[in-house]
Length: 119
Image 1 (tube, rainbow, N blue to C red):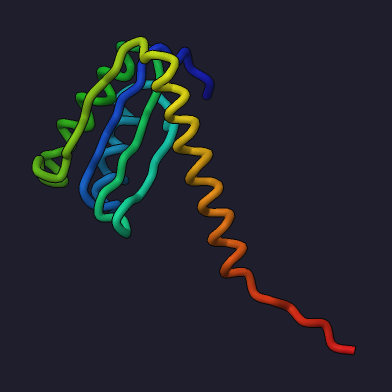
Image 2: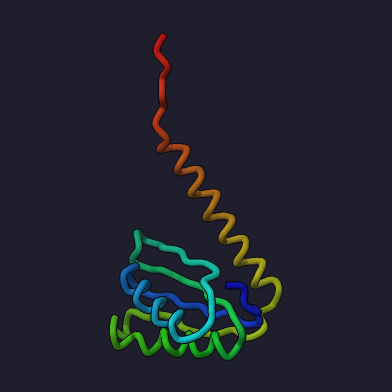
């Protein structure tokens, strides 16, 4: 789904399982898409960015807040929509994604088993 991305929503939630529940509710509430989702501290803190049209992002963020009744209001640390984000903010999101991808690639190379050929 490619939507008009004139707004973004930022969600920061304690624990990965809670993030899955909250983001699921946000995505079901409106036509938005996930731009990025990152786990920190071993999944104890997760942040997700969603994007779409302003009204859709507002509805999705509101649904995320309401999902606090399912996962505990104290577990939703940030739930905010940003209308017409500055281009530098969007650049920041791309930089975060690129950095995470590079870090994941480096980890994969470190953990890659060494295969020795026998003659």
